[in-house]
Amino acid sequence: MKRWLRRLTYGLGILVVLVAGAFAAVIAFDSPAAPPVLAAGNTIPGIAQWNFTELPKVQSVKARDGAPLNYRLYPGRADRAIVLVHGSTGSGTEMLKLAQALQGAGASVYAISLRGHGGSGTRNGDVSYRGQLDDDLADLVKGVEIDKQGVHRTLAGFSSGGGFVLRIAGGPQAGLFNDYLAISPYVGPDSPTNKPNSGGWAGAALPRIVALSLLDGIGLPWFQGLPAIHFATEAKADDSRTPVYSFRLMASLQLGRDWRAALARIGAPTRIVVGADDELFNGAQFQPMMQATNPRIGVTVVPNQSHLAMIADPAAVAAVAAVWRQMTDR
Image 1 (spheres, rainbow, N blue to C red):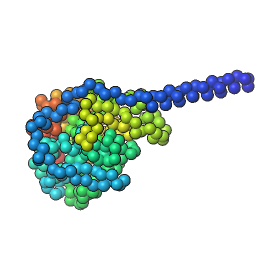
Image 2 (image 1 turned 180 degrees about the vertical axis):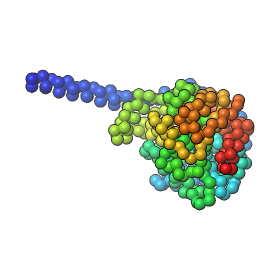
Image 3 (image 1 turned 120 degrees about the vertical axis):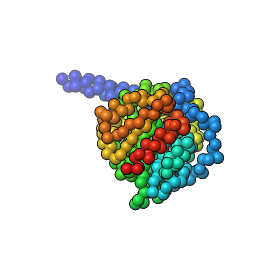
Image 4 (image 1 turned 30 degrees about the horizontal axis):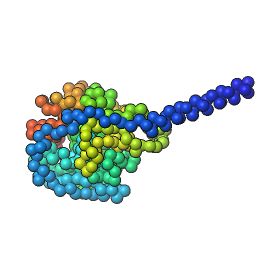
């Protein structure tokens, strides 16, 4: 009997070592591959004709760790503030046309660059811990002094930034803003609104993501600075583009695996606006999904608009501005 127990213990020990070794190998070597370049997620329609002399200068506030948080201000009414969040790989620069439309509707627009993008933070494509973007948002609201009484605050965001908007609206920082506007938002990989790999825009190191998620689930935030997603762009990492996200940056942007519960928690006025011809997401699925998850969240589908057109096409940005006016003119 003792011999049998020794053999069993020895066998289990070998099994644990093999499993741990395989687990470590997955984390160490499963880097995200770069997908083929996808114009639908990489090239903003009409950007070659933009007049970038209209772009406001970059300003900055300090986060609680001393890192810079960059933004561009489009001044409007002092009592109507919009914090506007860009999509994946981008920065506040690409929000020029949408910011101008919202400014024209009367808002003071703060087009921010999230940490890890556009010179914000300390490292391209990374944060220091999961949830740091939430803390940065609170620091920015205070730093630009829109936390004053009498200021109506809207958090608006596009694509991955739209998913971040919904994350904040359903999370502990929901009280930072009066209302929320998500434009073509990323909800989750298993959401009916999502096309496979976001229409070919995202190449994910899925085994590494699963392994790191399991570690995180037992309270071990190890190796979370490793790359997890490579987007379908040839752009290099600089102050304009962020082609690769670490696990903790990816997780800081997203609603998470239980995205249905996160959406159901949203109580503040929230609207989703999406193009009918979106190449990355299923525009027609947003309304039925929200009806089943949180019918308080309204959905507007803009005809004949693609994914990136929602931040560039005159008709699309006008539609977004009109929805914002409806939200704030109550």
